[in-house]
Length: 572
Image (cartoon, rainbow, N blue to C red; front, side):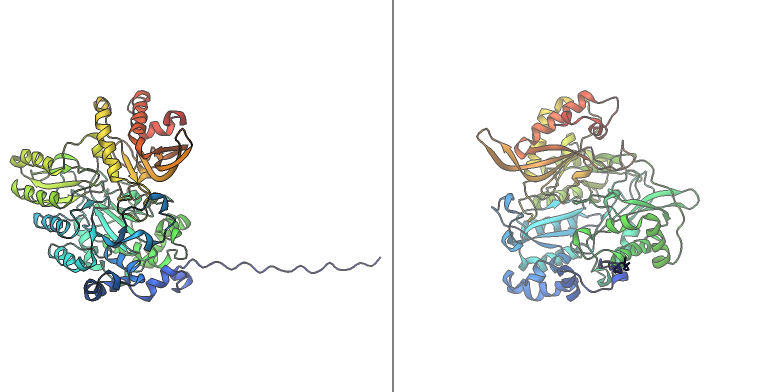
């Protein structure tokens, strides 16, 4: 018998690692159209073209690369054309969805808005935005119906009172969340105002930070209420007291929601006030240099943190970007009050601050101008916006409190809102947003009105408001996964009796929340198989599930705790 050697095995070449577009690993070569656009021209440069060309020659003079790309670096998006059904949102191209008008986003960065600033904001609304103005859950003001010809004048007015739209959108460090009661609260740990101002002074509009992999969101607070939703920001500095080093900040990184929600994590370090700007700069540069750029849906900082872990992230921050270690530090103490600051509260100087609720963030030109007059008239000092679509009037003298609280009501604001007016938020929705599938603002307002009537008997029983967050698409601008009841807009199929029909509706998320009163740490809501509610039946559903909670809860059990333990039948 002849024995033959077996055929030699072919050695498989190891598969090469696929480049993710990390600049410090793969080099800066663009890997997709978005990265190519940013490499061709810094987005900040488009301002000059807006002022010298587009505002003079009109909408038709704007090339696609600026209109659908770089305009975002200055807070500008084209808004949705009226009359396009939500079912067509995913079917149409951007140019088919958009109108010849813009949404313009103004960043406030936790700043105190003087009466003059409020009048400017109100005047822009009345003169250029058909009376629109919304307070967002990022402490921004958003206008609609803005025409390109008016943008330079809007910028001039904003800058006259220290406001701007610089990097309010785009792959940049967007507007900062700052504590609305910074520098005035009697129970404040540390005032974050100097840190925010220093970061802005040194790096806002820096071309070196104008090409990040995706958006980058910042939150900084020194208040015990944990009032800047720190668990869902890319970087957060949260006030703590170190046993040896005194007041400073705890550092959190990698939070974000959207379609792949992830809560931020502590790095376990203590950051002094003096170090805080450089630490912020180190984190944003890690994102710039190591963030994933190949796929935009995997490009947020949360994906890098998920792969690295907190230990490696801390090591890279300390060794490559700071050049020194940071001391270990304590975690934030449990929250001592609600972060929306609604109601009347004593300041450390003997004056008062008053938190007020509009209806789902809607204010408008007349409200802003009227608020300026009211603040001035009662001898108050300024206004800040909150991360909950609310506002806080600062420095109200004791003898002006009654006049202020009464004067808010004719403006569509209230310091004594019902539980659902206080705790409901809604994104822009289909009225103006090109990504939206359903209406949100008007739907939420109508639901609030219904619930105020239907659930009035439960107000004495419920010891805290139940959050209701309404979003027009899956992107979670209104934080649906971290609400007691979160509604994600979609087109749903219902049985009409004569056959199936597609209607605007919502998928329901239940039991989410962020660290706050009654909750030491954040958590994401649960979904229930098949639980979708037509937009016309939201009030019916919320009433039903809240009444079940009120009947079934045990002792001081929160809605979120009950929602996570309840069986699916109880949540239908």
